[in-house]
Length: 431
Length: 154
Image 1 (cartoon, chains in turn brown, orange):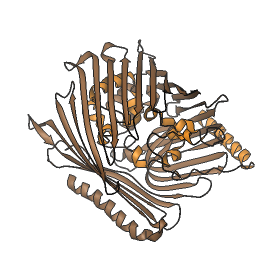
Image 2 (image 1 turned 60 degrees about the vertical axis):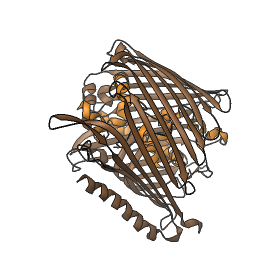
Image 3 (image 1 turned 90 degrees about the vertical axis):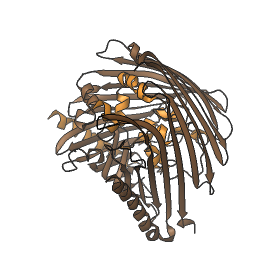
């Protein structure tokens, strides 16, 4: 059954490609990307009351298809998804789905008014609107100062809960803007699941260019119309002081109104929603370019709660050296000072990416020290080494990597991965 | 009744704004589908674009060392700016209904990207999740994406 659905997806992509290549004729541009990933690791699998170590060999295929200027300029088709097959037939993935079509839509982008219309499975990203929808989206600038976006269809993330019958989602955003000086948007969305109203939110978002230097303020507030309470206030600023950039932020969430327990996610969020707790998080990032090739960053964040008595803080610092073209060397140290000792840890990381055309090498090292033991251990070590090379004028990339982890949950865990990525691009418009 | 009144008030405000703006004329800015020139990794938009007199605050889109953590509001405000260089599939490494490989595994060798959940996150997520569960909910808050969590959390 699992193999059949995997092949079904691969065949679908192949059929779509075969249809669009001839239909598109000489004026179309077609892009096709395939990423094949083979992972290797060992896990204990419990079967019939006994537990044994098994080699797990999942083979993943990620396929993306982009065809632009189909029949007419501005018309395009885009599709992307993944599928997995357990080569070792270990039973490790017996309860998991073996693939997903992430998006597949037909699009028309007009030459004026930023007009855009999309039909199919797509992602809607617009301020607090973050949805995966099987449906229609329309975006247009009705004037140079006003934009409207509206969408409607079936929420893809609810198709596994009682089927798609009675499921629906819709919403939109209207925004008033004046160049880059300010933008004020009002958004709304609703979701029904099996005929019942699951979620109904509205709110506003704001972006303001401040009068002094290259500084701005932006953020949004979301109101849960079902509970009739404000669920979210998230705001951040950006201030440029010489070569330094300071980004203060403020977030406030009420669990009962933001963690929608009707969405049938995990018990964990449903439990938190009942606690009546709220969280206020504020802090700032500082980014400074010491030289043209060295950047340093610092982060400080404070967490406060309405019901929990103590607060928590997180601080970190990092330095990144852009060492040669497309090569980076970086170090980072962080400390999470949780409200209780079992929520405290130190974290260190060192990484390198060295570009050696036509290939590269990478290394990554992470160390975490926990104030209290977790399953009898108070530290974690993670090491990853990788390398890759390009072939066929960078159309083919082969990457290999191996990593080692020793942590509270895995003792001396070795994992390997091979990735083969292939890009094909045909430009009919250049002929 | 109160909710209907609030919605009506918002609708009237929106219609007024539409009418007021429709009578004005100014140069229209169209975001291109792709960036005109080849841009490399870690590119700073402000190396070529000035903030003043532009329709987009390019300073906000500079890929600084923390950009992988802070790009949320910029991307959601104007995803077409991101789409000039990044395909939707690039965003789907993290922002997706359901994927099995966490981004730091799928892009194991992209060490220069500060991707979520790198290293032993199984242990750290207990602490991060207790301190700020909202940070988990954003990506794992729907039935498909929560399959990662359901194994242990039910």
